[in-house]
Amino acid sequence: MHTVLEVKNLRAGYADREILKGISFTLNADDFFAIIGPSGAGKSTLIRCVNRLVEPKSGEVIFNGKDIVKLSPAQLRHERRNIGMIFQEFNLIERLSVMDNVLTGRLGYTGTLRSVLRMFTKEEIKQALVLLDRVGLADHIDKRADRLSGGQRQRVGIARALIQNPKLLLVDEPTSSLDPKISREVMGLIREMAREFHIPVLCNIHDVDLACDFCTQVIGLQDGIKKFEGPPAKLDKQALQEIYAMEVL
Amino acid sequence: MSTLAHEAGMASITARADAIAAGRSRTRARRFITFFAIFLLVAWTVEVIVISDTDWSRILTGSLLTTLGRFLELDWSLVPELWEPAVETIFMATLATLAGLVLSIPVAWLGASNITPFGKWSYAFGRFLMTMSRSVHEIVWGLIFVSAVGLGALAGILAMAVRSVGFISKTIAEAIEDVDPKPLEAIRAAGGTKFQILWFAILPQIIPVFVGNMIFEWDINIRRSTILGLVGAGGLGLVLFRQMAMSNNGGIAVVILAILALIVFGEVVSYYARKAVI
Image (cartoon, rainbow over all chains, first blue to last red; front, side, top):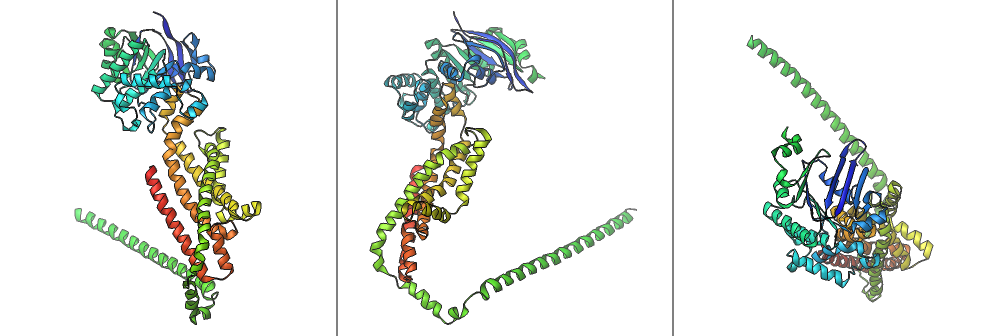
């Protein structure tokens, strides 16, 4: 099993406040990592440092044989095409149709002129149709995104991430805006698609039960420090107390 | 003991009541003096500006009614000559609004704090252009452009276009500043360029504001173009100006009615257009 992502001694934050204090881990081809921890532990910052939506201060993020941290802006844009991202609040463009929203996942491959005219290739449209069918939105293709329910919107978000043909999926609290039943459906769908396309997943999630049910490996974060790493079975009461120490007190 | 304390308490309350009552009568006196001073000022202004500066013999001898009557003798013969300038007025307003939009795009880009290209300097410059456009009256812009490009509709169009930039670019810039940043992040994460972020994530969010305000500005430009003729910038205003120069009171009244009809037309069109868009 080959390594897809290697994070080494990653630090991030501001001059007066350090958010990540040296995080290291390795993500392999079929892994589904869950990052758990109390609010403010740095989960969201960690995930955003991987595709540099947040600039890390130091450390290495080796992906696809390159250190993401050292890439030039153009190289970074190029590499981001290989990293799909799913967001807590879906981050759809409300006034565009479901189809157009999914196709925005292809913008990294689309030239300026063709994006002005929204000219995506027939191949891309076909792939969007296949993915929308897979996430169960075949009947909603022409609907505007703001007409969908929360669960449906996140499905659009999943299709948009997958149409990039990514080699890694970053998933940021995918269920925080959803009710418990829909949350399980969405997590199930992400896992199913990740397995089908052999994409490793790095997923922030505050819900420990959900994390244990769907992931292969758990990283416990507290105040920017990795307090735990292991399979869900090893995440016992003591480990949880360690991770959530601040809240227990 | 308790009675004594009670009496002492009563005494202090009485003293406070006296003090408050005295304070209130002072306030009353001050208020009276203020109002009286304002009244004197107004009376003096009326005396100086209206009473001694008006030709009362003209009003009191009944020639007032005769003059007003002359406006009521509507000169309908003018109507066939009004169609062309009326249509010209609408075209002027439309072209001016479109030209104003084109000019507004770079100004809004400079003046939106979240996307301005060179930090606070370009932001300040953008805001300065917006203020300048709005703080100069359209008649003054008209005079400037009439002397620049000569009499005619082009001067009026340019004047209104420049005057429109203030409002259009300010509302676009504010809409850009209020944009929800989440979709921007999604396109950035997928490897999109800055231009693609602007085109796919910002533009769809500002379109409703954008179109609504364009229609609003078009409506205002119809009003402006009716008046810009006064400085020689074409349209119905120019006809009005000619009738005034000829002292044809009936003709003036007809042109004013035509302007009114045009403004009502603009209002109705923009009402339905805005409803269709939003």
